[in-house]
Structures are given as C-alpha cells and as structure tokens.
Length: 86
Image 1 (cartoon, rainbow, N blue to C red):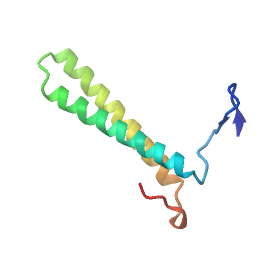
Image 2 (image 1 turned 90 degrees about the vertical axis):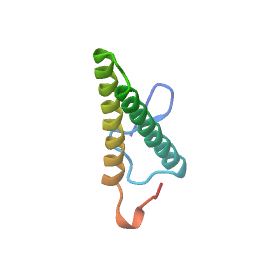
Image 3 (image 1 turned 135 degrees about the vertical axis):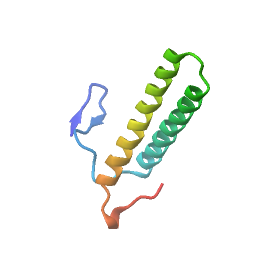
Image 4 (image 1 turned 60 degrees about the vertical axis):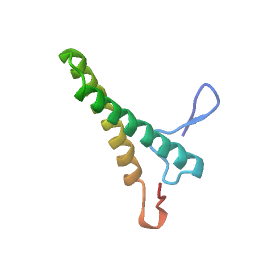
C-alpha cells in the first residue's frame, strides 16, 4: 500500500476484502458502464453517418471492456465464504 499526494491510500492490487461503501461504488461503476454501453449501441444502430457509427461502436466496446474488467477483478478476489452480492 502506498500513500498518494492527497494523503489517501492507493493499492497496486485490489484488497482481498472490500468495505460496504466500496461494494456500493463498484456496483455504481458497473451500472454506469452498462448504461453507457447500451446507449452507445442504441445510438450506433440508429446512426446514418458511418464514421460516427464506428466511433459510437468503439465507445460501446470500451465501456463493455471496463464492465468486464471490473467483474473480473471482483470474481478473482472472491472466495466462497467471502462473497458480496450486488
């Protein structure tokens, strides 16, 4: 664990256990990325401009990768007796 310039703590790897507040924030992050992914996909489907459509698709894919990364980190750090359901 390291201290950053603002006095807070930063981790090189996710901690094995997280607080309830952290779990709620992670749930929010999943929701935000899922919503952004859905909106990007919807807009890309309805877009007539090929260049803009491609950018919207890239944006949606980026949010999908972020969503999957968060899930991967959560699943990798959960043991059967230490699961938090969101």
